[in-house]
Amino acid sequence: MERYDEAIDAYHRVLSLKTDLAPAWFACGALFAKQFRHKEAATAYAQALKIDQQYPWTKGILLHSKMLYCDWEGMEEAIEEIEREPQRAFYTENVVYPPKQLSGER
Image (cartoon, rainbow, N blue to C red; front, side, top):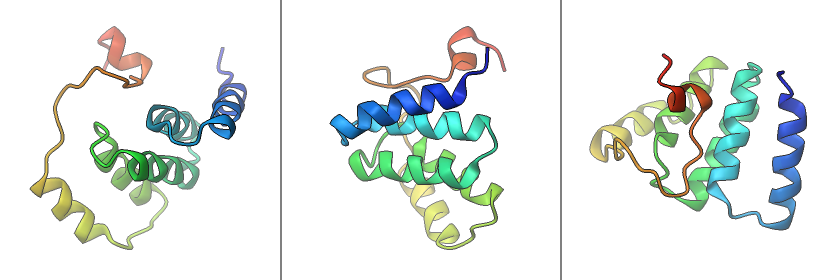
């Protein structure tokens, strides 16, 4: 069952009550990305980073999402930032992992 829109609606209801939940913004981004809605995904990932600038994987995923919809603005700066401050490889507290990462699938 791919009920992405229902899941996004549920996250938006949560975020309407508490807007500073980086994991919820990250999850929304992942759901948008699954539907190839890359601009909306990038917007959600950017919101997660506004809340927590070190949220795992988000800087790189945001960069990738922007590339998928051909938004090159700030690209060089973003790459430099990622190279200067590599994010933690694993961080489990308050992180929403995509299902494939949990199951070990690639």
